[in-house]
Amino acid sequence: MKHWSAPQIAALRRLREGFLAGTAGDADYWRSQEELALYDATFGERIGWKWDAVLRELALRGWRPQSSRVLDWGCGSGIAGRRVLAAWPQFAEVALHDRSPVALRFAIEKARAAFPEVRIETGQTMKPDTLLLLSHVISELGDAQLAPLLELAAQVREMIWVEAGTHAESRRLCEVRDALLARGFAAVAPCTHSARCGMLVPKNERHWCHHFAAPPAEAFQDARWAEFGRELGIDLRSLPYSFIVLSREAAVQAPGFSRVIGEPREAKGYTRVLSCQESGVREFILQKRDAPELFRALRKGRGLPIYRWVIEGDRIGAATNVE
Image (tube, rainbow, N blue to C red; front, side, top):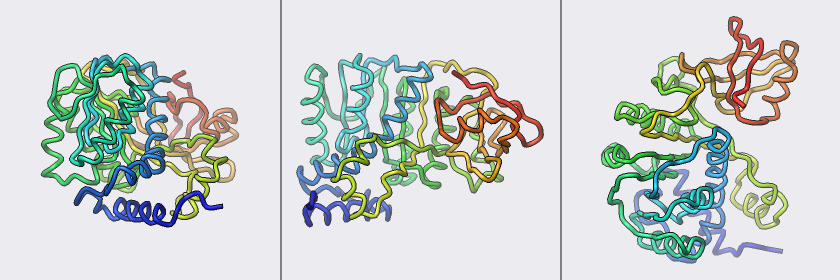
């Protein structure tokens, strides 16, 4: 039984080819409300799973925004704004901005249906006390377009910026982070510090700051998702993302802690851990015999991947979890 029609698969392929080629930003790539609904239910939902992972980490860290208003810039189908409104119901107002009239109309209708009590406006007019949301936009912005966006971002109280977990997009987001820290922001996540990003030093050029979201179990039990992955050549299990969360208020960061980057790379009897801390980004080795419980915890990805390491040379001898 086919769950997606041939025209739907063709539309999804066209959209994906534009995203992968980096040409999606050349023009309005949604042709109709129906096509946008198709995107929202597939690619948009996968982006929503990345936002779920970010919001889950912020909850584990005990952080929530203090702003009274949300601005979802480059909102597309509005998936980021809806995820944030569901997680933090204190917002009374959300502003939606997108260059595409088709996308903007769709995002407004979806937000009104899901959150009828929230006041919705359009445009990118900045107001004080705003949480700025940015999602999967950096690949569509050249330097000439990115500069005014950073000027806008510099005016907000808080921001959450989520991107695809590619090498190029992640490292560009690291540069954005450092530029905005110089404008008076403090790092909230994923960083455990507000020092210069250790990824940007020459010796770490091959690395990038990325993480992996866990798709919901339903994605592997739903025949529609199985067909989507098969037809589009997408591994539903792999969902890399990069993100930064910044605030004007100094974040409460536990001193001396490190953030695991990506997933530890396991070998026989040991695992390699790429770790970010205030002193820079380094790769450590954890031997199973040195700390078997920690070894198992890292392998299974349990809890928040923030630790205070006990380091002996380049080896992890023990660790304290932030929790």
